[in-house]
Image (cartoon, rainbow, N blue to C red; front, side, top):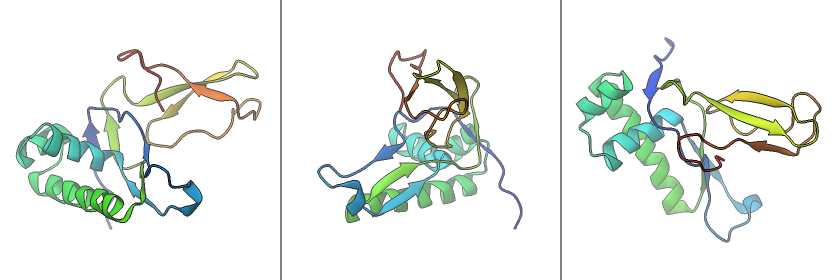
Length: 146
């Protein structure tokens, strides 16, 4: 199997986890959608771009875009219909400049570090191991990011 070409992503997801309301996490099954699959849904379903236009934006062919968005729609439908949690994580992506990293800080030691987008939330500070960490605000929206 040949390596997958990186897909260009021009929008950072507002959240990387969705779950049915009122259902404890321990009772939920979880499905995963990649960052490029979410970008495909954004371009096709939210912005209404054709597969050709969206493929150009993501730097993939029309046919590849069609496969990406088809898989994404099936995963989202599975989560909605069957009441599963949906995690947005990973994928062969190249974020637009300024979107590719997230900044975290530790309340205990005051350390700061960056994490690549799509790798999930860090569990602890890499310097001191404390779990009291927080993510910095997005400069574009002024909102805290997940």
